[in-house]
Image (tube, rainbow, N blue to C red; front, side):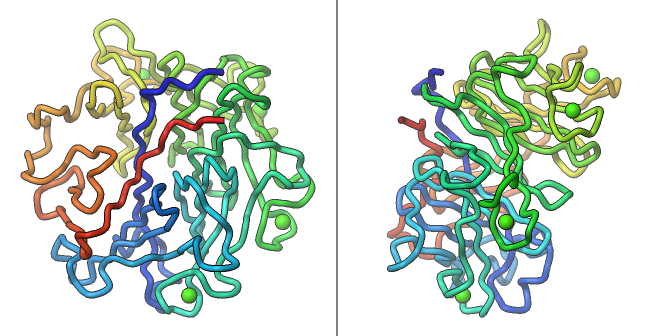
Length: 348
Ligand SMILES: [Ca+2]
Ligand SMILES: [Ca+2]
Ligand SMILES: [Ca+2]
Ligand SMILES: [Ca+2]
């Protein structure tokens, strides 16, 4: 497998749980905090807009939620993806250390560095025998599992989609049979050679996997509910830039909006696509179903142009606006820090 050097941009920013003790029980989307994994400092950060004024310049607006340099902590190297389970635990994948760790600030002191607040959820000593070579995007599913993609980067095992479930409820997925490869590029119907994007369709539970070689978004639907996507018709093309629709290159982020629309990015030409499956056939390949939502000219479609860095780059760091009106813009409380949420090309 070959990872293109240009395939790189990926933000590890999600709506997250708040840090106060009382907020731990809230569903993470309720607090509108933003969780960031910093692949330069190997820290997990949280941006807290306490007064909801659109910036995080307030005291404690910029928080180090987990510092892997603290003695005794798991040594993160390239944290790249974040997800939250229903209990509020944050899961973070690291494509260099090839671990998934989980964190939760249980004593309400603002970080998850205390005893019992962090643990290794997955590493390569897992008893399922699944070997990760680039643990990339992870997502929590509705059944309490964590699904993710591994991009082979030239080594065995190759490219696969995995699911982990803590069967014995001991806080990790390291026990026998707790990790399953649910699709791999050899046994599956399609060779998903360089999977870089992953999301779960809320309405169906199906997985969407973005491959950058070739540039295709696939749908994985477990029709016979046997836990994998190898059966006939379970892997289909969701979007492959048909004639008349925007051509995509280096899609590394796929995400559904609450209204069911699908958003994709193009990390080569720097634009964002929005798709609506108008004929409900499970793909976005029909005429008019996919359109450019925003591009780097700033002439966004349906999105007011902002004066801040609305088009994320590897260094947009503490200055970012959501793809919504300018009131959503926030900046960093500690300007001397640079926060990078870029997923760099895994090199093994
Ligand atoms: Ca703590
Ligand atoms: Ca377990
Ligand atoms: Ca199946
Ligand atoms: Ca369609």
